[in-house]
Length: 510
Image (cartoon, rainbow, N blue to C red; front, side, top):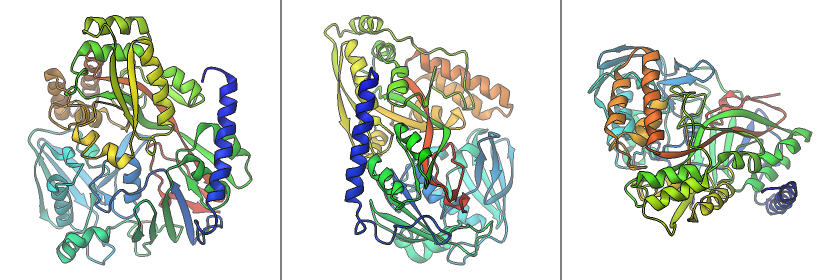
């Protein structure tokens, strides 16, 4: 979109689409959900739902937020302070190669069994060893996890690991006794310690949770939560505006003004932590060639996307990190937009006649992913690159046959983080995952070094060195961070979180 006229047409089209979708969401499609949020029930319409009831067979922010209603981590982060606080853990201490955690007492799982250190050991070992786990890389350096008594857990790592708290955030704890009782059927029960209990789940349908009235912490205000996966933006908006949903995520930017003028709903906006970038898997040609990767950096201008796709609700990334991430380096400068320079580099790389690639994206996961990739494809074309767009459902895109299996050469993705370590370790540490299969000995050394560094200022300096190497190697094409935008019923009291979690236990009803 390069003028006001197409933007106007686009808004008209989306509004017409929303009206059509509203017609499709007749009462038969949304049974008994035509009222506003109440203390008895709240309806969340989400662009992403649970792909599975296996609690570790995923690694995406919104799904972590879903699970957190039912099962809980040892620690959570205060994003305003960029510091951690205890959930199931009461305190902790970093001692050389060990982290010692003291657990809260008096907590019980939903089946009535007591929460102890053995449950932590069981859960961590399952994350590490379960064949379907997509979270095991968080514990690659863990050599042992022990429970010397019922309320102490000791993590031992191969080398000192200063970022263990970051590794433990979103690592949820399950009941060992329930696993022993129900065996493989335990995942159909989702037995945790959280403020809500599992009731039922349908793939691509409803997840129903009911309040845990015996919760160890502050009891949730709303009795029942229903989360429904609604992949289409227009359908989510229609459900919200019709009073058939109370909270929706991934609100299109052109709908913000309409929501704020609506008597029943409002827009809730917060700067997000998700960093969007173009990932290039170096085990696939032509991305094994640094000149090609540099050419792609010169060919793409994210300011166009922010202005015309997100209507200014975004923030350009100059390097591999967003400005609010620990390890961000304000001195790093992104590659200038220069299609001619990109062409010259492709010629040097042996592609004088240009080249063809496939650009993969997941429209049900990232807002306006298709439109973004269309702009990227247009920009690449000016540098002599023909990019064919390939749309995939997130479960396929992100699964073992896609990104996490290392089978996608070039893709558009977003990754939230509060600390650069998780991004660097997960994407750019040799052999850690197959997402891009990047390898660089100096990056590996610096990642290892910052793991050992207790002094936070020194650790940040090491992370900044990594960022400079990644940009020099053109390991990615950095794009932007975006505002996270939600639609919320006006009788729902809630402030949005930057990490994309829609946490109903934080909500109250007027």
